[in-house]
Image (cartoon, rainbow, N blue to C red; front, side, top):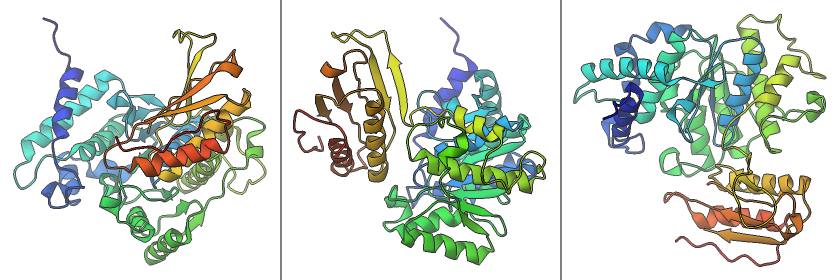
Length: 414
């Protein structure tokens, strides 16, 4: 019988964490944010975390993309980077990137078992094992400590105020991406409540940036910033002219907003960590070459991703191409649909058919026979979300951009 690897054993143990109650279970002891500081002491991570030069990013939409841009920029500036994002698509190691590369199985296993064994030995009924995302956060910080990275980029999981990543007490700079309605059962049903939770990552005297927000959300961010003495600025979308004719590494017009926020965060990190020789903070008409390269080469799976598959025979001439996106709010579904509509128009004629089947989008066009190609939408929706609300935004947006020879029906919750 083939021996199970240390990495495979770690994955089996991680699956048991899924049964632990999360912050969504408000009556659970595991939802108490204060526990995370006990875990840090147990793992002896207090001092290492205090020395980390962290960029902390929250938001409803775009935080993963923003963090990816930030990591790519600073890596191309010559720094050793540690990036913690969520969720993963295929392999859990995607959440932990060192210098832009997923951590290898050997190192993941080493740090996993170190954290797990110590926590298992020192937890009890009063201080239970951390829930899954909390464990991932602790593991990430252990990994980044061991790998001696120069900068840590932390993406908030849910919310901000009570998120595990908010164990960080002295980040270098904070960012708040676009805000909207998501996880309302945890964060609140109004933009004011949601913005208040996101602004929970603000720390006294630590500069912060955000993007253009709805008035209701912006007023809360400004109130929280004022209370903590935080200098809050609105980062404008990146001017495409600053890229010298090149494209962003992440597709979609909305990524220029995320890229603008990332540039502001990087400038501020460089300034506050004493690396002014790398770039001039006052530059507005151009970007340093390292910034341009970072923005151009940034890569994140599942965000406006185009994947050609030339090995599948679909019974007609041409290749199968997947247009993939993990959009899961009504606003991001509309952005996703707009991106897809623009993407297929760039290299094809108006399509003859658009058929919908009941947050991942797969639409295969025929590259060589555009006139006869068929676009097929595959839509998946978790039970906690409203398929009527989400899919209708896709249908309406695509209908206004892409010609359809058949009228699409209303989505159903089946």
